[in-house]
Image 1 (cartoon, one colour):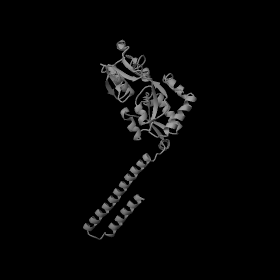
Image 2 (cartoon, one colour):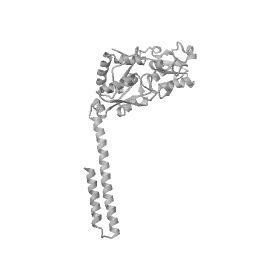
Image 3 (cartoon, helix red, strand yellow):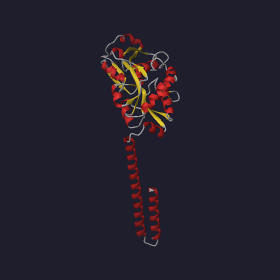
Image 4 (cartoon, helix red, strand yellow):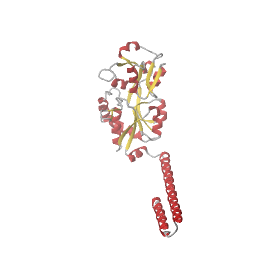
Length: 306
């Protein structure tokens, strides 16, 4: 309707100019300028109206309590916030995301009739990314801390884990039996449960973007040790890996007298995707898909099958 109105104004301006063909050049120029201003004003009005409509639609979608399941299905994709965290989410040789979490996320998306889309996020801003609808869930071996459960709605726990101290293999004996990390520079993923555990034991932490980066720090000798998830340590260090010179020696959960951690998937508060996930997960545990996928990535002893 608005575009037709502009076209009508343009046509009217053209007719007016034709009717004045016998007028002076000065009059024609004046009329041309007036017509151009009329069209420009109409275009500006349309752009402003469209911007207002877009903003109103976004606000309405956020405030209307719209079903997240319907939202995901309408756009045709489940956007999953991740970091590079083997064996949960990591790229294969072709750059495609694989891993236990990635494979199960693809299966969950398929159950919703959509495709999974993976976006690497800064872990410190995961809640902001979720609330801003840049992602639809956080699915990346996320520990169910009090902070996480207070800021998101989370799934049933699906995996158990612990934080471990990674050190150079030729110095492992120096770290056995430690009850404190005071005096050590310890690389940690910023905002992670590993960072909390290292600080609780007195370490001078060196925050980096990903758990993979912590291993680079230790291997290069720029940090004394690293704190990462046991599941990742089992997959990324030791014989047959890129970090054969590293090993892990200390379970920080045991050192602090803490229970093992549990992983869960995070969704926006009030999201009906939580119930959809929990139902999906129960089905996949029952039909053996969860255990089969966990076994592919060496997680069969860590996955929760109850």
